[in-house]
Length: 191
Length: 191
DNA sequence: ACTGAATCCTAGCAGTGCTAGACATGCTTG
DNA sequence: CAAGCATGTCTAGCACTGCTAGGATTCAGT
View 1 (cartoon, helix red, strand yellow):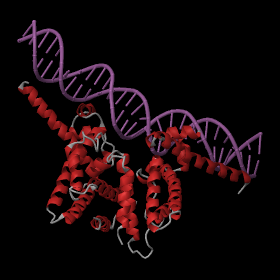
View 2 (cartoon, chains in turn yellow, purple, brown, blue):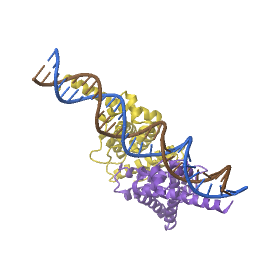
View 3 (spheres, protein in one colour):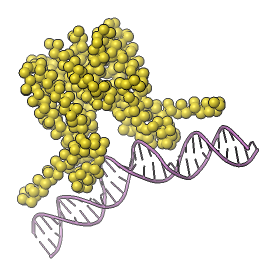
View 4 (cartoon, rainbow over the protein chains, first blue to last red):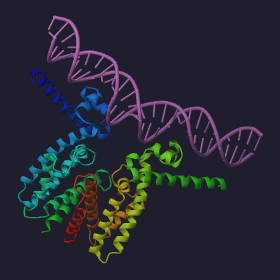
């Protein structure tokens, strides 16, 4: 491989990342409905077909942004869990970190959990950052608990439900903390 | 008001319902992405502008379908709760009824809980059928429990999370029952 | 029967995701 | 060094979306 083609590869990778960050920026400032292929092409100063030479479609772009989000969320959850004094506190810390992430980065959260993407969940080909996020929840339960996987799914589902229902105004967004407290107390008072 | 204008009013109301049921049928057979104003107009054998003389926009049509859905869901939940032998069994029955509704009528469920609509939740102007659905969850907890409203929100959120995450393939849809069992047992083992 | 009003449809706008084919650019080979 | 090939990029356009202005048509009351 020649030096020039290496440079082109590098430039291409750089542009690839440009597209992802541009999509994310537009989404975070104006919402995902404002992320159109035209606007995105404008932002990166290329034409639309260039986008499609990097991604199969818009879903793939959303998926790329989501993947970055999973990496960030995994970091937040891990730090929350590790800096907690004990197992019970760990669950609380992870839940609160999850909720904080969802409220502070709503666009990113949407890309990860509500918008259609080409990412495959709960499979062997599931990318590592996504697995990591889930594993942080699993890690909050005792290793000898056979149902820890199930517990993780349920608590994750509950948190996600709280997020989306309050985000769409279907439950009042005011008392989020109380809901999380209740949720955590439910798991705390069970063997 | 003359007899003819009364007849026209009647016909208009009939057409109104036609639009709603047509939208619902298309959604249930081909998904909501297939519900376009053109297809809908075709189905009811009128032109697109007629739709807009009945509804402010597509969101309002989705909202109308959703409202029907809330009425049906409220009925299911109420029957489930009332035919349960005791309070603990009532919660289980309501949860299972909710999940069954979501899996058997996915399009309707989407209109009610994930698509953007006209409907306003958790407010004084919230239509009765929607209030009723929520009240069925509240009714599963003891009347002297000050936090029964909060409990209802949390269990509803958890169920909704389970529904949407499994529907979008983000958690494996196989073991739904186990998740609900776990969720119920959490609430059962708390004062 | 005539006029005014209510009703409805045709045609079109501005936007969407996505792509075929023309164009220019740069690389490799004779 | 020049010819030709290949890579990369853009213009222009397709088929679709929700939505609407304005003309045509039908109907009601006088």
